Image 1 (cartoon, rainbow, N blue to C red):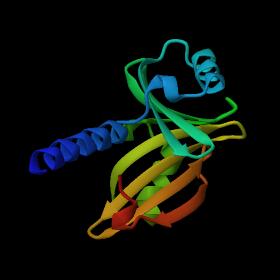
Image 2: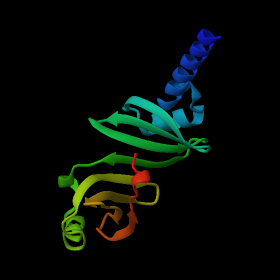
Image 3: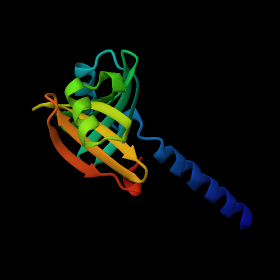
Length: 153
């Protein structure tokens, strides 16, 4: 009985570990894989995960940078994101950060490309205070959202 329970526990742990590592490419709908390979033919080290019941996310490398792209289950592309260096943040956004977020440290910056527009997403922190800021390509602040401890990946 005890030995059977241990084997069952190990099996459950291994299964949980496999699920936590994402989905196998065979789980990804054909329409999603096809749309992805058309949009990113040179992508390397692709891993898949479900964002929701209707959306898949691919994480991959392209031109030496880490990217993520989201597709609906029918293959419709939703968004592509990639991290950028703070030196790549446009001057107009740096000016707003210096003025309105003086003393905050930039934790992460990325470009998010969608079908209707591209935006810059910048996470800033000062002490316990953390914000996720979204700017348009002209440097206009579009969104300011507090980051709670539970929101972080």
